Each structure stands twice: as C-alpha cells, then as structure tokens.
Length: 320
Image (cartoon, rainbow, N blue to C red; front, side, top):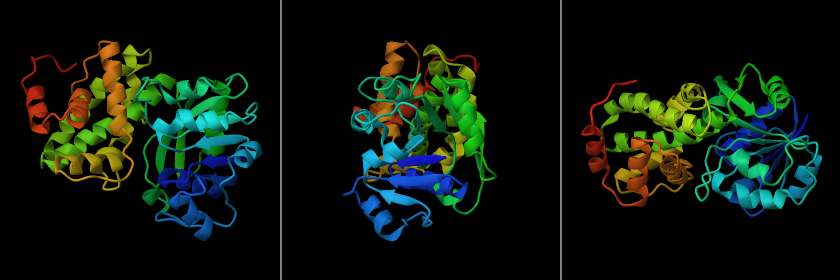
C-alpha cells in the first residue's frame, strides 16, 4: 500500500517508520523550512529514530498527496483546517485520510474528522482516526502496545486495521467515532492536570484524577451523541499511562512546569483542547470540573491550589 505521512514531528516520523517497517511504501512529507524536516531530509534520522533508505522524504505536498492510496496526517490539531485547505486543492477521490492527532478545534468545538468532512465527500474520500497509547521511544525499542482505528465507514476501518496491525501494534476496530475522538483529545487535558499535581507534589492524587476524569469525559461523550463506554477504552483510559505518568508526555510535562512557573516549549495539544472542551461543556450543559479547573488555570489566571480546593468542597454525591 502506498502511504504518505504528512507531518514529520515526533509522532509523524514514528508512524512513517512503523508503516515502512510492516511493509508499506512510505513517503514522509514535511514543511521544507521546518527544522525537524530538514534534519530528516539531510540525515534520515531525528532525536527518536533512524529512517531506513526505503522511506522517501519530500517537502512536495502535491506529490505526496497524488502518489498516496492512504494519506496519514500528524500535525498540530489546531492547524488542521488551514492545512486541509491546501491539501484539498489536489484530487482526493479514491484516497483514504487517516488522522493521527488528538484534539478538538478550539474556535468551533469540532472534532477533527468533522473539519476534514467540510472539505471532502466522505463517500469518495473516507476519513478515519488512529488513536490510543504509545510513545516513539518505546516503539523503536520493540515495546508493543494497543491502539484503535475508527471511522464512520466500517469497510475502511476494517481494512486499515488489517493492513496496519502487527506484533508491535495490535489495532482494534473502533465502534464510536465521537467517543474515540473526544476521548483521545480529552486525555491530553487530564494529562495537563496530572502534570500540575506532579508539580505540586500531589502525585498521590493522580489515582483519583484517573477515576474521576474518566467519569467526567464519559458524560461529555454521551452528551455529544457517543457511547459513554468509549472513555473506558484505549482512546482515553487506555492512554492514561502514556499521558499521565510518562516522562515523555508533553502534556504532563507542560502541566508540571506550568505550576512551577516555567515555560514548556514543545507542543502540548491539551492546552487548546481544554478551551474547546470547556466550550462544549457549557454548550451541552455537562458538568466538567477537572476540565474547567485546567481551563481556568491556563486561560483565566486561576490559582491551581484554589481550583483543587473547590473540587474538594463540591456537594457530596454518589460515585456512580
């Protein structure tokens, strides 16, 4: 299968490496002036892995799109709309788009597949999402994990799972596109909260954060028309170890440094996603205390300790 991976950051380069490893014809495409692309083009390596010579590296977006049967996109979720405006200038009929980012558009509250759906006829250009746990640093060492591919098109997701699964990544067929996308995006917000607890030396609270965070996100998924059980699957709860505990988690690290008054320079998708989820909670009248606390700390200057105390004095309720 000819696959073009658009985006060559940490996760995009890992996806290209993985898909080549399991036998596909892979091209890695990035912005010509981006440092991570220049490094890959010149050395065929980055800080995480080494590309074999079988992976083609090119900045030519038109060529990358035209050659591909499957277009895998791994960029900042907040840039997807503007990026797809450019991609949609090229013929896309007969191709499948796979989104590997985890986010919700902050300005609209739209899921990423909804954004792509504004530019393509999904009967001709199916859209799928690839979500779940895992870090490049583990995959390149041969440490396996499980992930999910979901789509509104049953045939497409079954084909992708069949083509992409291996001894390194076991894929499952998702059954709830809304839940898969919201759950995957929301775990980054919970990751920010976990990092804040680490930065305050309240790490022992992370167990309660996991339990209550999953409940909270399940309510939002249900309100949006998804299956609340998706929050307890690989897209959300299953990704907690990689996001709430790993030293490689950008969201956890961002939260930790935020409460310590430091500035984390790498992309943490949960920051803008907290804004989107807060907006969705208000619009759909869903109680999201953890999301609200993270949002208010990041965007309204609220004190994190004050937000924690507010959650502890909330009205007593039954757990389930």
